[in-house]
Image (cartoon, rainbow, N blue to C red):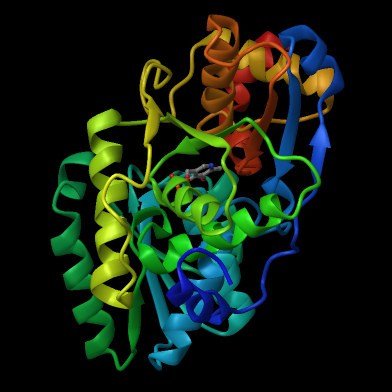
Length: 332
Ligand SMILES: Cc1ncc(COP(=O)(O)O)c(C=O)c1O
C-alpha cells in the first residue's frame, strides 16, 4: 500500500515501455579502492534507444498525453539532450509525432543524441542561449503553431520533471525496497531535479531509510531546493497528495558542476576512461561522470563511513560520449 495511499492509483497510470526492474550490480574493484560496498543501479539498461532515466518518467507522461487525447509531444533541452532523444524514441514507438525545442546551434552533421532524434523523425527548432531564456514563450508559440496545423500537442517540461514524470522514480524506489539488504547511501545526478524528487518521495512511500544524495551537474543547491519543492506542490495541486512539513531531507552537493554544464576538463574525462577500464562501466560526460566524482569525493571526505553500503544510480546518457570524441581521443 505505501505511506501515501493516494499515490497507489497514480502509480498504475503508465505505459510499460522500459525493461524493469533494472539490475543492481556490485563494483568489486571500486569497492576495494574506496573502502565501501559500492553497487550500481543500471538504469542505463532501461531500454536501448530510449535508455536512461527519462523513459521511467515518460511511461507516465505518455499515458497522460494519450488520456488527454494528444497526438504530438513537444519537449525541450540542449542539442545533446538525453531527455529529447528518449522522448523522440518513445513518441515513435507509441505513434505520437514529436517536436523538440533545442538550445544551441544546429550541428552541420547530426551526431550523438541529435542524430538519433533525427533518425526517429522528430522535428526540431533551434534557439540561442539568449533566446532560450524566454523558453515559456517559445513553448507557447510552438503549441499554438501546432494547434493551428490541426495537431493536439502535449507539452513535456525540461527533463520531464514535473509531478507526473516523477512518478517514474517513485515507482523505481519500489525496486530498491524489494532488495534483500538496504543501502546506507544512494547517489543520483541533479539535472532538472525530477529523478531526485521522485526517488525522495518513493523512498518514504516504500519505507526505505537510505540517505539520498543528489549531485548537481548545473545550477546550485538553492535552485534544486526550489525545483523539488515545486514538484511537491504539483503533487498537492494536481493530485491532492500532501506531504507533511519537514518530512524530507534534501541533500544536494553543487561542487561538481566543474567548468559548466556539459563541459569537461581533461581530468574529468580521464576518470571516465579509468572507470570504464576498471569496471567495464561507461559513465556519460554530462551527468553520471560528475555525479560519480561527487560520490567518490564524499566517500573520501568521510561523509560516507568506511564499510557503508552505497548505491550509485547510473541514469544513462551513453550517446553523450560521441560528440566528445575529439576531447576524449587524445586521452586514450
Ligand atoms: C543521463 C542523465 N542522467 C541524469 C539526468 C538528471 O535527471 P533529472 O533531470 O531528473 O534531474 C539526466 C537529465 O537531465 C540525464 O540525461
